[in-house]
Every structure is written in C-alpha cells, then in structure tokens.
Length: 68
Image 1 (tube, rainbow, N blue to C red):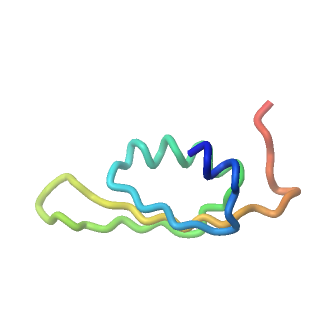
Image 2 (image 1 turned 45 degrees about the vertical axis):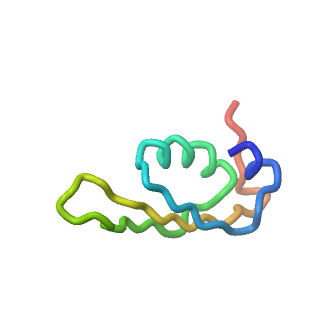
C-alpha cells in the first residue's frame, strides 16, 4: 500500500479476494483516488467467497483532502 501511495499512478484496478482488506485499503485510497467502479465476482458458487474488482482514478489536486 505504501508503494502505491508513493508513486500514485493515474489509474489502477484493485482485485481483491478479501472484502475486509479491500475495505481497509479503500479507507486510505479514497483520500487520493475516486472510486469509479466496483463489481463483485462470484468465482466460487455456493460458497461465501467472493472476489471484488475496483477501478480507481486519481483525484484532481484540489479534490484531495488530508485528514486533520
């Protein structure tokens, strides 16, 4: 996560197999990125497991708000 936030690519796709870590990481990422798309993918039918695909695009500079 630190490397991503150091380089801050313009766009990225985050693919997650754990919604808990996705939620944890999105708390940090949405400070710098707009979440444009999220899709759940049921790769393992009849189980509780699900994948998530998220498209993030870097915010315009004046939209970035630091937490005080």
